[in-house]
Length: 538
Image 1 (cartoon, rainbow, N blue to C red):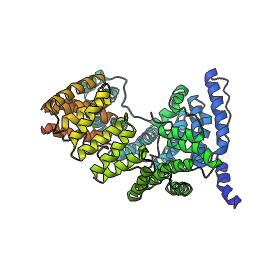
Image 2: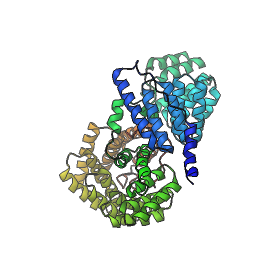
Image 3: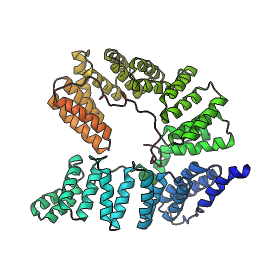
Image 4: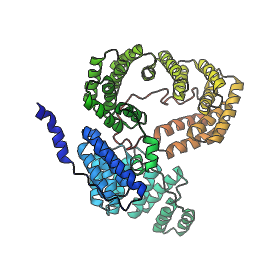
């Protein structure tokens, strides 16, 4: 039996290559010191890790070497990570990035293709594969790859721009011009595209339009967020600022989970489970993490084991509920959330998930009570306040919501996020007084002046519409749409567009957020994306 249990580990070890110890003498003293310390920490930590946890450890040390431009060693580290976790597309993707840095395009192409086969969602994989194909002379393959993504992301400037540039290389000038102009319309500040546009017009023989475009050319390219690569190349100082954890391995795992670093949290937790497989706190947290990582069977086993050891544990019941919800079984999930809340009425996550379940079932009055308890547990949490307000509005009690927010503003008069909720609520609630709507417009203008982001732009638009200024409201609403598109947030952009259509029809929305907003339609818990960032979320 012992031989069978140890066999997978022996097999995994056989797949990995020995990680070289590089010469750091040519690095700056500080970088060399940090690298030596990181390697020592890796050598110590890897002894107690297996599987995905060990893969994450190899990826982290690989990132350290990549930052120091020691790509040969980084390549081995990411190779080992991909061997230990062959279904994790992140490590294959980063192998491709390193291969490109080493000027090994064939290897980069193979790794990007393997990563894309595992993860069709993370667009940078497709972008870098297309770029690699184009650089290798396969512009047709690159063009096909990008066209496949266009139906799902028709308003993404970076995708349209890359299509245009590929089409320019293919001498498909008309298509290139169309796609480049679409990209510029969505992201006007991306003035580097005017150079490509000028070349396309020259290809068509239109010297005047080419000259006009060239005169506008600059150095700003469309923005395409790539948190995996950004995380890999983030400086040591930035890493320590965002990823610093302390305490026991269990405490570190909780801190990493709070930073949305699910794989790293699971790797940290493995140390505790290896030393004590009956640790209820570690088991229930492992169940949550493994469910988020898509390991449904393992997560269920861990949740059941934790409950068998401690059936009255609020956290263990909560974790069992989360495992069920992530698996799509909302009925069983709700039962265990209720048990968790009964065991500990002050368990915030239980109240949140119960409220979310009630909202999805259109039981708004019940959702109000759970969110009210959540807001009592976390009185300064703006999301708790927003969810409570949304549930009250959905239950036909926007007046109660307005009274509640007014009471909060007495104590938190400088809270800009709370002000925005007041703006949205006073502008859309039928029982709001004229003085409240006037105050909402004043608040909205002040917030917009201080922080003109998409959310505050949309709030100002609501406040203007509440005063009958529907034409004026369309300007900040258009800005909100632009910001959402620029950020690649398609669902948010769609919500903002639905509100824009109401303004165009001289209709005032009857709720503070669109009906599709997560406050009104909370999403069911789902496994974390396969391409979650290497470093904690920013």
